[in-house]
Length: 285
View 1 (cartoon, rainbow, N blue to C red):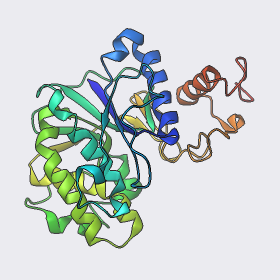
View 2 (view 1 turned 180 degrees about the horizontal axis):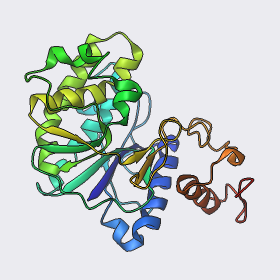
View 3 (view 1 turned 90 degrees about the horizontal axis):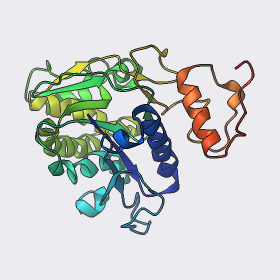
View 4 (view 1 turned 90 degrees about the vertical axis):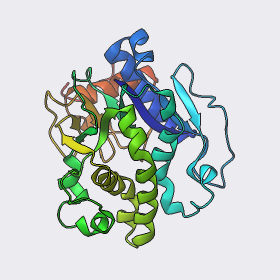
């Protein structure tokens, strides 16, 4: 499996991708980690930013540079389309993967806690974490009306899952055109800011439905503040963690950290980055 996190060439994403890479090397060893990562770094996030063709901070992180969504598609001018950088970034590198290669598409605010499980992925299948459905997506219930108007099938293929999104490269190649177009159409059809922001998640559901790609749910991902860490969670998604809060970084109160593998990994990285003293530990550790 090759991990494909989508980042942007700025300080905000630099922190996230460096944390990801630090833990990838800790999990797989430095040599093996290089063959198990292909980060996509988008050259800029907004039209006002300067295009940066080279990522000066990427160092030894295996990566590919990609154009921003509005530079690829001149019709994508609404700032609400911003999360479409995931699909359009992926679309610029997907051809480089062999059709049978299993890849793991990720938000950048994630990292591996332990080696990924040995998964058998079928053709026309995505393995996903479905925690997002009950948490806020509700694409099977309260918010089904967001995607049902775009369905070509009966609603039997999707499940409200999202990252990690694990599948064969050929499955992503099949899905990407619809995933991109449906994202745009869902944003255009909605006025609710949250529903627009989650349009990349909703459009994946609709794209899988329309292309008869079955989403298979597995309990693979720890989301601090949403679920409880267990031995099946090989990856963490700290998108809403209020303790290791990406919005307040580098101002972090480590005294609130629970004693577990996830926060241990964060502490190791913070010490490595000299954010904490080498022997610093939260109270009670």
